[in-house]
Amino acid sequence: MCGVVGIIGGKEAPFWAARGLYALQHRGHDSCGIAFINDDADQLEIHSGKGAVADVLSHKVTDGAVSNACIAQNLYTTFGLGHSPQPFGGSFWDEDGSKHHVALVHNGQLCGVDRLRRKFPSMYRSQSDSEVIFALLPHMKGETMLERITQLVSELEGAFSLVFLTKEGLIAVRDPDGFRPLVLGRDQENDAYMLASEVNAFDMMEGHFERDIKPGEIVHISHSGKITIDHIPSKRENLSQCVFEHIYFARPDNQLFGKPGYSTQKRLGTETAKEVKGIMEADVVVPVPDSATIASLGFAKEIGLPLEMGILRHHFASRTFITRGQGNRERAVRLKFNIVKDVVKGKRVVLVDDSLVRSTTSRILIKMLRKSGAKEIHMVLFSPHIQYSCVYGINTPTREELIAYKFDADSKRIAKEIGADSVTYLTKEGLEKAMEPNAHDYCYACMDGNYPIDDKSSLSQSIS
Ligand code: SF4
Image (cartoon, rainbow, N blue to C red; front, side, top):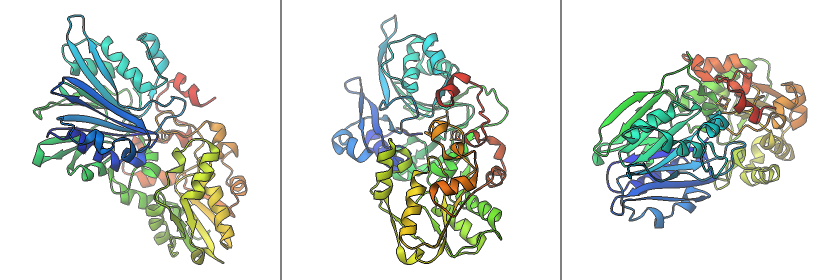
């Protein structure tokens, strides 16, 4: 899972792209980068590095960088595919001597990467599936870069929301299954078009949301603002939009897959409360900030208990789920949270969180709550058991690391393991109710094992 941004129009595209990327920092902080074509020098410039946007894309990079089009990405490294900052890009020459500049940013994860590497041999420098996309371009035929990219994306399978930077303009592509989001925005004052993984990036870029890039769409935006659209044919009846984007990743100040982020998260909490109403006895609902805060509003209202912010978060600490190494993750959790003792002391606490993946955060929070005097701790998750690895761009680890897989989705054993008095999960049926009216257009593979793409080679990377 990553955050991608594109902008075309105006003179300060790198400055605005960096601002949009800053708004998407929550989608990845392993590395980030930016690419633009320096029109005067006829050169493609790429600046990238490890770390957060504010550290890597300093004013030195973006101030004074005059360019009409720019792409940018925040990287969160996907399981097993190495760590290569994006954008990927470079120049290549055709046999007739014509020179092309191309760069791309990718959110998602391809299936069948080995098949592509065999079919299109090249000097691959990394394990990254995104590099494979870039390396395929010279193999494609076509008069224009748009024709080549249209041919290229029909070769791809899996999750890909892509933005290409070319001399012909920006080209946005979303896979026909619609796994990852990609949205189009506009800043009418400067006649600029914008692309981003999430709508909230447009607020930072002083633009507004126009529409989703539809699953399977190839949208070309020229330097003069002309838009042309082509399509990748779909092989499946339903879409496979990632339901985990709603549960964990996307910000609530957003419109995601056509649904308002805030009220969808609240509905997740409401459906969870409906399933435990009358069974659970407690004094106070405490959310794990920030990803469970909005859902907890719906949960507390439905169940009729007070909601209190019994856990506070230090906002300069990073998201633990996307931090590598168990030791690092544990230290990160302790740095990240603190308990408000007055809220939990002597109380039966319902601790609400989005999901249990490895359970690192919950285990430590429960210890901290007990130390602060909580009498009972009942953990409630507004997602079903995460029992399968994701192969479409979310770093849910090998099955052996998933606590629900380790304990056969037995909530009593899981509660004992993490030190809670009880653990309750939202059922798959409850989750589908929250996703109505188009619950069939979502992927739930990490919960039920029904992988929408039957590509055994990519599944074997994660599920042994
Ligand atoms: Fe999202 Fe899970 Fe499907 Fe991956 S497997 S795309 S995390 S719902």
